[in-house]
Length: 489
Image (cartoon, rainbow, N blue to C red):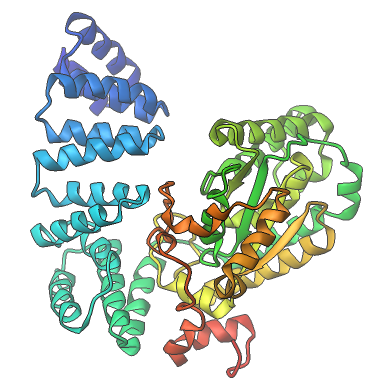
């Protein structure tokens, strides 16, 4: 029957595979392979908690199987049990200590959990055993700062890997990003720029971004969310004061702001959620039902009703409440929620907004240097980055003029220049008493799953202020796209 279950899965017949595997488990409750396959179905169905239970039974039956231990770790991670995920993955590594892909996976979860030295060691060993395994070279290079000798030695290995003709574009891009970072570490910014150009060009060839179409979306948002609409919808939605939206361009300091505030005992940092985007779809569905036809967000928001706003706002606040564990404020740190602030005002009128700003040249450089895991299709070309940044600025100017939510602007340069003063301003903005824990944010073990994971585990410093100047003319397209004179930032 196991073979039949596998065959049904291979054929895409999940329902029949489930019936077969459940029958196997009725007859042999702890059959590891059946438990593992059934767990995979649960994960695909969006139920990682059920998968965890199945995989715990499988690993108990086959405790020396590193693949099962890894799958248990991945399921626990998906279910939000970060400590359990680390434990399972570290056990998997102990069973297969030379598996580079496994070491890299363990390192990534340890990094998210704040176990930095364990993460570094996992990445080092993965690179030593198999530097050509997917993602290994880039993760290793990002895990530490290299000096001249170590940078040259590591770069020689990475260049050998990059010469393989069979590499797909994204794998080659990873290696170019790694070479760029190594050159940057030793101050060879000319070579770093060449590698960043190559890396970004490779990724840009795999994504689609239309600056004109994005501009049209922002036009619609501005035309839809007007003072008249906000006045008409006054009192709509869920008035909970729980939501705190930390928004801004990616790499503008949003993770640092969240980390500082999440160190406060009455604040929960939920990370980058898709919950507000989901609320936009909930609103559209509710308005579609009321209209008897399909209506699309954001234009449909002009027809918001009390019932639709309550449904969308209630779902959003419920999502935050489930994560907040009794905290009185919960941070949703999805930077691009700046696109959804009008929606937030309609459905969550008790929300507060913190807008992070940073020198646009430093922001653009930091984006250009980053290989994002998904999304951000505009982030791999300096002209595209400038276009997206211009629309961010245009929309934020609109929100400053019309948004009926409390809005605090936080400049990255001011924050790193005087972390206590700005942190106190942020805590006061949330109507909370000051806590000295906010100044020890770097010691927090809370999960951080963004590109800033390494930076926010260290005390604040201003080393990244003005970094764009090191790249000189390589950033001319960004400067021109932002409309900045050559002598200004």
